[in-house]
Image: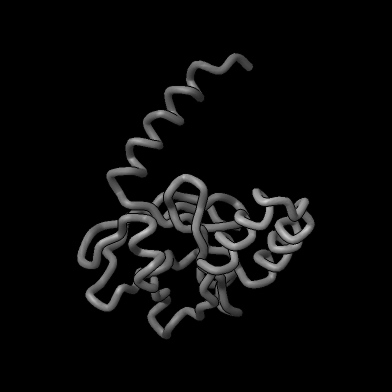
Length: 137
């Protein structure tokens, strides 16, 4: 289970440290892929397989095929290094506007981790917080 909000730097070799509480669930490998809010989504390998099944079960019309290509062609199988870091490949960095040397947001979202450009994340979080406060119970 992934919970919490952390800010870590993307080092000069394009690696980001996973919070220590996330590492156990990622030690058997993980998949980094594009998210639908211009963030990156990091799934434990087994969880990605379950999500992949949902994508492949979509109707294979033009939208479904394009969606599948976006999810799978951008996906990158990774392993944590000895320091608990994950490498973010260039095309994924570009997609999420992540720059080496910059601080990025590492967000636990229960069954997955999201990696965000910090500025974009803080804007999205502010909108989400406002909507949350406006919702009736």
